[in-house]
Amino acid sequence: MKLTLKIWRQKNAQDKGGIVEYPIDGIEPDMSFLEMLDVLNEGLINKGEEPVAFDHDCREGICGMCSLFINGEAHGPDRGVTTCQLHMRMFKDGDTIFIEPFRAKAFPVIKDLVVDRSSFDRIQHAGGFISVNTSGNTIDANTIPINKDDADKSFDAAACIGCGACVATCKNSSAMLFVSAKVSQYALLPQGKVEAVDRVLNMVHQMDLEGFGNCTNTGACEIECPKGISLENIARMNREYLAASLKG
Ligand code: SF4
Ligand code: FES
Image 1 (tube, rainbow, N blue to C red):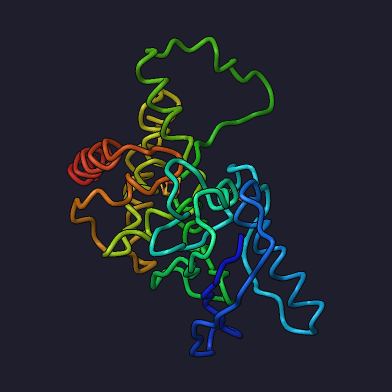
Image 2: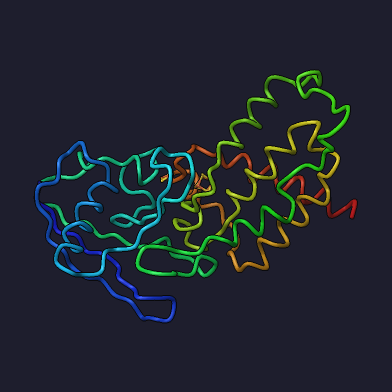
C-alpha cells in the first residue's frame, strides 16, 4: 500500500507544532498501525531525520499507552481496539491518514504524538485502591460471597486500561468514563465498600483539580472506548457521589 501520512510534529511542550506530510510505500495490510509507524521511523532515521515520537508498550491492547487520534477518531476507525491492535487493512491504497496526539488540557503534549497522562495516575492515587493488610491472617477473597451479577459488572469496569480515549474523544475533555470505571470496580464489591465514601469524593475532587471538563451525556466516550466500558458506570458514580456528599 502507498499512503500519505499527515502527522503532528511538535519538538517539545513549548513548541507550537504543526502537521508534516510524509509519503510512505510498501505497507502490508496485515501490519499493525504502530508497525507502519516503525517503517516510517526507520526511513526517517536512515535519512538522518528525527523519528516521530509515539507512545507504546505492550502492543497487545493491555497497557493503555498507545494513544493516537487517527483521522479524527481516538484509536482510529476500528471498534473495540487500541491503536496497537489497529491493522492497516482498515485503510485503502492511496489513502491520506491524519495522525494527531490525544488532545485535552489535562493531557499536555510532551513531544510529537506523546502526551502526559499522569493526571490519570493522580486521580488513581486519590482513591483507586483498597487498604488491606496483606501480611498475617488475611481472609482469602474467594471466601467472601459476591453476587455473580455484581462480580461480572465489577470485572467489566476493571477492564479499563486508562488509555484516555474517552477524554480525547469527548468535546468537553471529560474523564467521567475513566473515573467511573475506577470507582465502580470497587463500589460493586464488599471489599470496596469500607472506603467508598472517601474514594468517590477524593477521586472526583482530583478529577476536577486536573482540569477535565464536565460530562454532558453525549456518549462519544462509550463508542470510542476500546474496552467497552459502559455509560452505566457514570450513572453509578453519580449515585455514589450524591450518597457520599450527603454522608460527608
Ligand atoms: S474508559 Fe475506556 S477509553 Fe477511557 S481510559 Fe478506560 S479504557 Fe480508555
Ligand atoms: S501499546 Fe499497550 S495497549 Fe497499545
